[in-house]
Image (cartoon, rainbow, N blue to C red; front, side, top):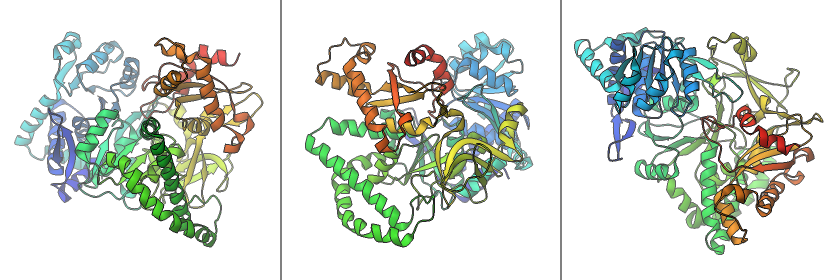
Length: 633
């Protein structure tokens, strides 16, 4: 069995179900059925075969979300080749390194601009022979730099495939049948949060392990349900989720994580599911609160009251039905007795809140929305609690590229919030302390996993493979606390632990997440390795700060840098930090942020952030070395 074979089986079961929803020239979504979707995969596969794609070779794909991406991906995998994906926002140096390291002879580029970016470095790509363009714009620019590189458009690939299928209708399916579970499906290069990108080698077995297990208790996906896609498709989390939905007979609607675009697309497509990174959900929550805070005082009081009611009601229900994290054995009788009366008393208020408050936010998600899933990073509790309070179900998932990537996800009907769900039943796991000794549930340690979803290793990098993979056990590098029911709570990353000069170990993520609950703080990076105290780089919410500056009559020219130097503005941020990070909120005295520096420009994907919005701490330390040095003078 292979991924493409699995998708083919689905097209036979649900030929008329929607597989893809793509925008036409007028911006309206058009439905591509499962039957037509597979026909396109067959056609592209036959075309790639005619173009010279060989079993076992690596084909680069440098492009963003679009129907041609998933069609090409499944066609290449169907031929027994593997693809090497990356997004269009990657730097030229990063793209060149990946394509060269992965031995790519054939590369697909989204458009001529990306093709030129690749061709500008062709001297460092000695194996490159062919470039395939998804878009046909400005091919003349590419031709100027092509030299001995063959340039082909995707339309030409499809035309070649059509002609070949007319001559031999089973040419692709015969190749498909040659594939087996242990064929390499892809090389996904890590985002380089800690250094040079490493090529994670994933097989069809790795993906199939998750496809076969995640439907059911974890995700109840049905034919014709629609997932709105906003994460980069080359990212392992989005890609695996798309496989899961397509295999279930569901459909993918491609949008963008841009507020105005996403809102319009949500209204047009009326999706059932959304998968995104924590940053998007936090952005939506912050936008709602900004709107409320600029409205009437009565509306603000009413809104905050009903959000608290919703959150309290959900906590009581979780205790009543036994879906609270159990880091040690709880007494169900006590939980029921202490929660049943509050649930009964809160229920009418919850219903009233649904009419007066929640429905106004929920309608943005459409009238058939089922579930949102957050992955790719830690979801702040304030975001999770907010969405679930208003009735937009938001669950968490967890994984890493080296595990293809999903290791756990909250169960659809009975999520244990405060965790990222249970590790799959047939995935072995252990939590080890710094001396590599197992720790019991409720105690903190590093998570190790072993199953058929774990990667083969890093491509051409045995040294790095041996560091994380021993006897089939993958060191995830994540610090977790396990429950007695196999759920895990993510605490932080072992490599990101900050050790102060006094020997205190500090996990930055919980502190950063708590600070992000402040509407005045948009982004933050904690600092302090080998220092006496903690400091932080902060990107504030400029819209709110400028509004506050106007109210306080703080004099400044229309210049962010000048605004950030204002003592009054720094005092606002300092008060927010102290309100969030203190011993009353469970933080230790040495976890206090002693100094901070406000930055004028947000962190960017491809620069300070990975595609999944994780902070590249090594890059931040390098780019802001001067500012960091000044904080610790």
